[in-house]
Image (cartoon, rainbow, N blue to C red; front, side, top):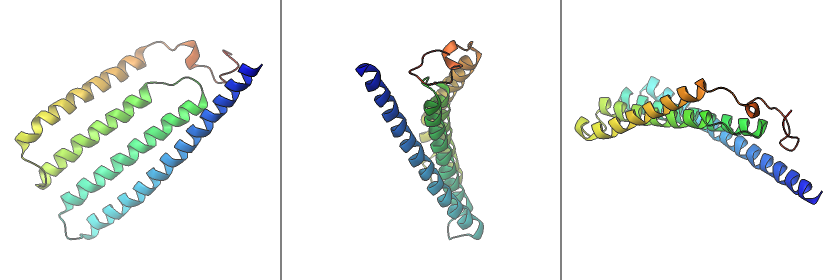
Length: 160
């Protein structure tokens, strides 16, 4: 009886912490979205820098917003059930890698980055990471679903 109550309190404590993290992630995403609108306005009006510089900043912020939203989605998934899936984490990682690749290439085009020869090794490594993430997602999507992935209930109740 004591162990069951202790587990119940820990499960609810975990849910409260995940809820707080989810709220903070969404607040951060909304704040970054506001910043992206400011950068987009500067790009449209022309605030002294070339459009490619503002484009790079805008792309950087918007992709960061997507990463925050994907992380918040992962938190929501963990609140819905006791099974934590790997695919949302892979998508967050993929978004982060693509974000970095785009920032490097946009900086190159705008003339703000280092020469192309200095970035080729980093871009090659990032491309390899993209291939690994995409391959992992494809493998996960082609695996048969297990019984625990379909369960929607309280983790204390066991399988439905």
